[in-house]
Image (cartoon, rainbow, N blue to C red; front, top):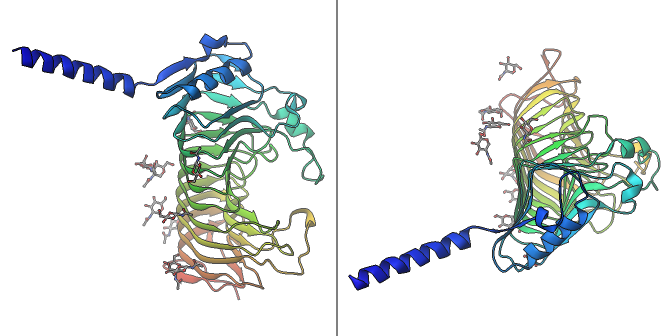
Length: 392
Ligand SMILES: *[C@@H]1O[C@H](CO)[C@@H](O)[C@H](O)[C@H]1NC(C)=O
Ligand SMILES: *[C@@H]1O[C@H](CO)[C@@H](O)[C@H](O)[C@H]1NC(C)=O
Ligand SMILES: *[C@@H]1O[C@H](CO)[C@@H](O)[C@H](O)[C@H]1NC(C)=O
Ligand SMILES: *[C@@H]1O[C@H](CO)[C@@H](O)[C@H](O)[C@H]1NC(C)=O
Ligand SMILES: *[C@@H]1O[C@H](CO)[C@@H](O)[C@H](O)[C@H]1NC(C)=O
Ligand SMILES: *[C@@H]1O[C@H](CO)[C@@H](O)[C@H](O)[C@H]1NC(C)=O
Ligand SMILES: *[C@@H]1O[C@H](CO)[C@@H](O)[C@H](O)[C@H]1NC(C)=O
Ligand SMILES: *[C@@H]1O[C@H](CO)[C@@H](O)[C@H](O)[C@H]1NC(C)=O
Ligand SMILES: *[C@@H]1O[C@H](CO)[C@@H](O)[C@H](O)[C@H]1NC(C)=O
């Protein structure tokens, strides 16, 4: 009897212990002076500092309501084995770009492991004033406005549920992360907002973007140099410029890109569908390999399938020397829908290093009801099933 009771008590303590371990300790910004309609820059920073220093799983909470916030730079490494930031309210950046002058990222999070950003909230970059002042298309020395998010040097982490709205520049920049996952994230900005790329990924391994809607004024997802093992799945894109690998090859010391899988996505009313772009006349000599684009629906897309190794916006390069970037092992499979142009498939590879092992398989794209044509240079795609043959 005594034995049995002590066993039960022991189990109860064990159970309680596990419950406490399983439940994160909350660090609500309201306990740090943060309140709706106020400025929470300091409250959020302090809550993060304490949550990060906690020895148990911790959670920073921003409840319902609308808040103002200036730039925050939330850093690890953290003591907490896991750290979550749950935002259920709307957080607004200063509308005046001058208030964030010189700040590259409004919400900068870095050097953490096992981080989760969650909630039903919205990060509103209040971009319109910055978009109006943006002259970066014409002025190479322009002052780049502030991005909504920078996720830098983060491992084994998630972004779920929240929305990034009207960023002044790119919505999200992912740099040097490992196993970083967007799931059920949303990006929303008008189709004519300049440079508002959805998610830009650089120098990372194992980034995935899943179940995410991206409506914006530039690339929905863009991959810079040094990325490996990237997955984009169940993503809807549009308006915007599509899903893009590159541009690459403009700068020295770039790293190769490999193993990119884009699957089950819908791209609507965009400039491009899926594309790979590299600069000619520039130093880059890396490789791009293992790029797979599968089960994609295009709705009214200007250039649904595009490899462009003569990418040279505003004639900022010397087109007479070809791109040095070697592209290989690329497949486009089961891509259907409508194109805004007759040449729905354009594969312009480098005359210096032609593309190798490019496959077009079951491509059913139409322009005005008829199958699109394909234009190819320095590539001989393998065609399986139905797909347009390269025009002579
Ligand atoms: C993330 O992983 C990289 C590579 O394994 C490691 O060098 C780095 O210290 C890790 N960062 C954190 C914050 O755990
Ligand atoms: C994301 O966007 C889709 C469509 O634009 C919408 O239906 C969904 O509710 C949004 N999700 C969140 C969490 O806002
Ligand atoms: C990419 O993923 C594969 C399979 O999981 C792994 O073997 C490889 O090491 C990863 N690449 C890098 C650069 O870590
Ligand atoms: C894609 O969406 C389907 C249907 O909602 C879901 O079953 C599947 O798990 C999703 N894939 C990923 C990788 O989330
Ligand atoms: C593809 O993604 C859509 C959402 O964009 C989802 O409804 C559908 O179930 C997904 N299909 C598969 C096979 O994952
Ligand atoms: C082709 O892609 C569409 C859209 O993602 C999908 O619904 C369909 O199941 C795919 N077909 C095959 C044969 O995989
Ligand atoms: C061509 O690329 C495919 C992947 O798209 C790969 O499975 C195949 O082995 C490659 N073939 C050669 C000869 O490299
Ligand atoms: C292309 O794929 C084949 C088969 O998987 C592989 O042997 C080859 O190394 C790949 N090419 C490159 C440049 O990675
Ligand atoms: C191609 O798509 C059209 C509609 O966009 C459809 O009517 C036709 O059956 C499809 N063809 C094939 C071979 O799947």
